[in-house]
Image (cartoon, rainbow, N blue to C red; front, side, top):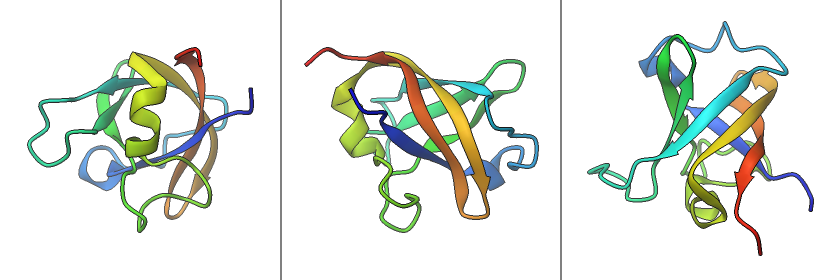
Length: 102
């Protein structure tokens, strides 16, 4: 299966993105009770907690990476991601574990 890419956004509301590095592992957790987005997927980094969300807007998704809406039904309640690039417009990652079969 090809890698599935996603963008972390909203980091400016948390800790920024300066500390992200290529190869870093992040945890993804669905947030179905989010009052603004029923397909929200929060991004968690060990030691810090929530650092952002999987982008879910055409304005925040980098390139051909998946939006949270496209990714939501492809992962379980949680998944793991790996950081590829830190870009000015977001942090580009891929899903490392937690994809559903099919």
